[in-house]
Amino acid sequence: MEPIPDEAIEIYHNFCEAESVEQYKVFLDEIDLTQLPLDDYAYKTQKALVALKKDAAMNMMFCVVMRCYKYYNLPIPAISKKSIEYKDSIWKQRIRSHRDASKEDLIAYLKTEIRQPFLIDYIFELLTEEEIKDTNEVNICFIKEPEYLLKMIHSFITIIDLLDDEIAKLIE
Image 1: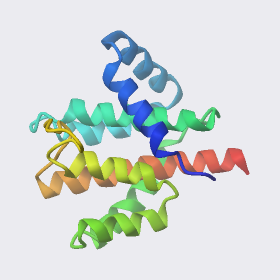
Image 2: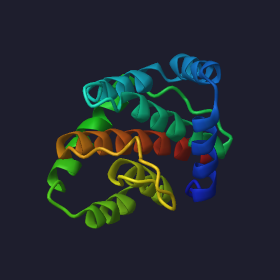
Image 3: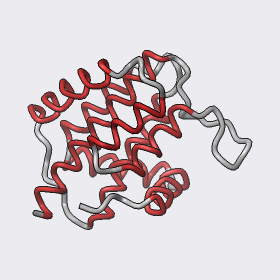
Image 4: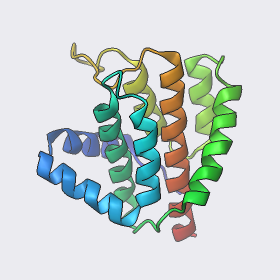
């Protein structure tokens, strides 16, 4: 399976940033109808970031990741709560076992495990960089607190892995 290209991720990111509140709500309603357990999983992980005022930024990133899978032009079957819990537990262990790794080593490890190198770069850039690349703008997605950062990396990697599995099943 070919990875989602960097250019496509950038297009979906820019689209999500530019869409109106109404468009955003329509997309979230669509996710609720087709991927409710996955949406619930994302919501629960993002809820921990309310105190940091990062929940809305993480929700936007979730929407970008979900939209990126439109690149394959295939309907993603509903992902069960059981599948989500299984992948979540696997990635929780894997991330925990690599928590002392450098950012570069963790990225390299994740790229060997997941077939989406550009999405991994996107997630890490937004979660770990204080400023947006090639600008002086503050990155609203940046998470300084290591505990919350690892929690969000774990969450996004779980979601990407789940979506990859479903797309791979459809392609094979």
